[in-house]
Length: 392
Ligand code: MLT
Image (tube, rainbow, N blue to C red; front, side, top):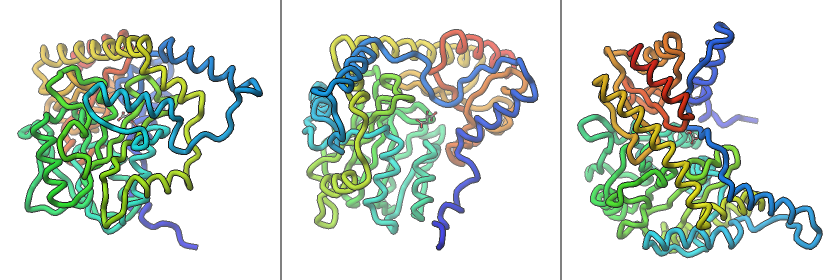
């Protein structure tokens, strides 16, 4: 028996596991010291009442013989697929229910999709970026090239016609930088992908944070995307489902490579390897699209955006370069005094007892930068910001 040797090419530990380990070590060495966490982008507000009510109702259904449900469709229940299709219709994007696959979150499907793509495909991944894209491709032994983000391009790399890609990752609003591609910029990527016959893997897990109506929230708002893109979204950040687990993947019927319909291939993969998301969770997710549910989740998003504004204002006052935090829950800042990302992480943890995420964990171009999340509660955010100002 041989193990998959590609796994040996991974870094020892996943970014957020390393951060968690460092916090644990600090806490055991300093018992009783309160740590203010603005590290991993995990929500702190509870599920909204409309979601809880829908899930309670679904639990009751599961307890009665007449309404009990066993295995559901692998692709997700029609009630949720239809609700998502209507959500797209509200954005003037035509997506049919059979193009929507319910998942247990964007992260899983972003990795799973690689099952149906050839390991020899050339991958283009922005740097800095959500580390799961890189790791899942390393696991599959794929060659990775990077599209470099920096202050000059506002951390929004653009296509290079001289470079040939097969698979292109785009995350907008971006994790970790909070930057958002506009229509023209996304159109340039879509045109490039169609010319190159490449596939765009579009992660819009943070789309609900876009308040600026002039910015796109789905790749399918861009003409030509239906022949080159798959979109991954999640209820994690939109509706606080990080611990509840539900998301969706949109695979257009027009997406055809080597004469094969990607939608059919993905469906085949899902039927074999996935038994669907729990009925109770899907009923909760459906409630996110109800009038009341939508109003309630929008309130939570506004709360997090106010946290982002508080962080932004403080950094501005201190003259620390930063972006994001307006149409995104992440604020991306330059480490003060020329510190490296991990030096600043250690400095803030040990001196200010504040946790953020080192930019270097998102790629080489993230070195010297740092990410703060707006998903903390208000008190934590205010205290953390005070401490950051004091110790930066
Ligand atoms: C993050 O902090 O980048 C995210 O919470 C990670 C994730 O969504 O998996």
